[in-house]
Length: 256
Image (cartoon, rainbow, N blue to C red; front, side, top):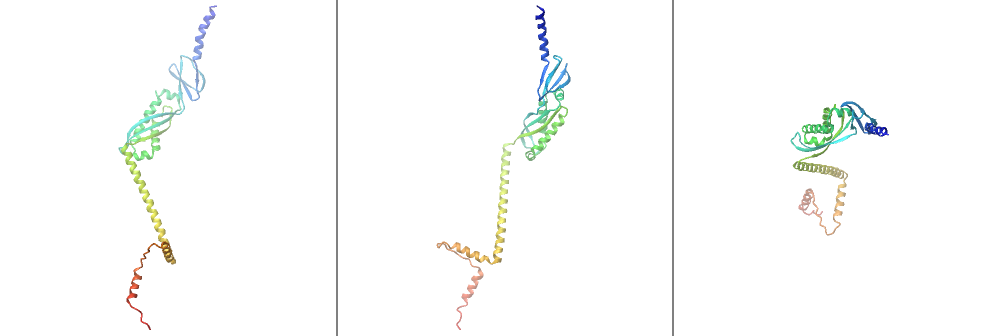
């Protein structure tokens, strides 16, 4: 009778040890197995069994991960202080290298990205930074890729989120933008007036050649005298006035 309880007493620890060796690896994970502290192999997704006590598993997420780069105060090439924050998108492609070659790859990538961001933006002017944000982000990504090439991690992309300018610089840029808009408006108005004057010149030339200028004048007079209370003053050419003067000064014509 004592044999059965004793058997159960020893069976329970054995079952517990066997159960403790079962590992479930999710589809988006990989398991790096260390046997007595040494790298052994990588577990694929599914139900896996390891040797308890002797082996342990470090799970690694292989999905695309985002890491924020805190806002950095950087001085551009033309000595303008700007505040910039960005986001790093990366993915583990070799779980064993990511675990064995770097202690905390997320933190390390963030630090490298901060340094690369300062180096790249410190070498460009403010206008270039504002106009070529994506190209600058690609340069930062290239520098980070060079530094972490042996970590088994792929930097998918780096995006610059916000560029904060000093308050006085914002005012200057607003005034500059307003002046540029006014300049464009003045050019458009001048072009419209030039086109209108050219069209009027062509119309006057055609009216003069066809003799229709007199008809246009009569139509204008008729429209102007529609109101009896209106007073119309005509300015006659000086040639007509001189002819009338000579006619009146010659006296009456003698009868035959």
